Amino acid sequence: MREAIEAMKEAFRRLSAGGAVMPVRTHIAAESAPGDALFMPSYLPAEGKIGVKVVTVYPGNRALGLPVIQAIVAVLDAATGSPLAVMDGAMLTAIRTGAASGAATDLLARPDAATAAIFGSGPQARTQLEAVCAVRSIRRARVYDPDASRVAAFAREMAGRLGIVIQAAESPAQALEGADVVCTATTSQVPVFADSDIAPGTHLNAIGSYKPGVREIPGETVRRARVVVDHLPSALAEAGDLLIPLREGLFGQDHIHAELGQIVAGARTGRESPEQITLFKSVGVAVQDLAAAALALANAERLGLGARLSL
Image (cartoon, rainbow, N blue to C red; front, side, top):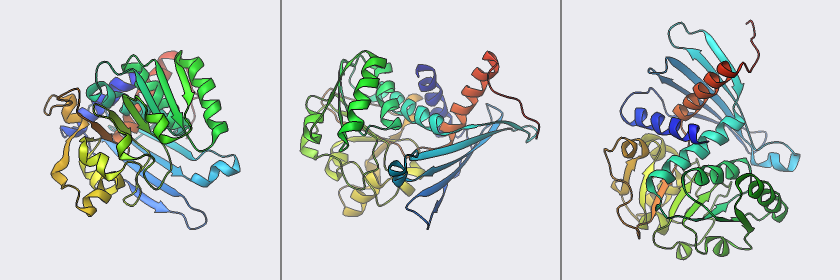
């Protein structure tokens, strides 16, 4: 995870500095069932690679015993256009999303952060906690999800993996008691906690919402926070956590302080005081997928993993 976090920092730095080509992704909403297909191309000249991810998000799949998020990633040689790799994108998505929050936590959370609150208990929630633990000395985490059986499984698995105390929270307010870092990784359409439960000094990573009309974070919390985004054009097109309070008049676009890549590069400041609330709003962008895929491909070649195919 630490390697992925550093790869995300560099990808965001390049994106903010103009060293990447990345259009805002294309959405297709399925008519047969509530779900979305997202098409995410990008080009990193420094890597010499072009990539595209096709990812589907079907919240109803959970009831069918299928993954909510499914994806494939293709990597091409930018010099020849030849395909270099095709890989499963579901785990890659979870890792790169967690790694982005890890990068944001490293740059924005208080150095003494020791307690985490996690909303959600799926694959994304797992990598969120793993990444936060990679950059801060987290000793305890509380997890909230309406499905108690999923929380119990999450707690058993992640406590064993990370060696920390993980407790099931009975309410959002209980999850937030004493939380220094908060991660929201849900499919909720509405805020998952009350603003009054967010204490000064908290850092939040909000990764679940990627549509203009959907949010996990109360507007008042966003107003109180120093807001950092993964990519400003994508955030202004898709981030309901920001767009809804913008439409409500709680703040203007200038309330968005910076892109994460600007903070990586030192062009903008991060946290300025122990009492400041910081919020990293991520909708997820294609350069993350390409950077993660390039890292996975390099490691696979080094370790002799994968299968070679003739096309």
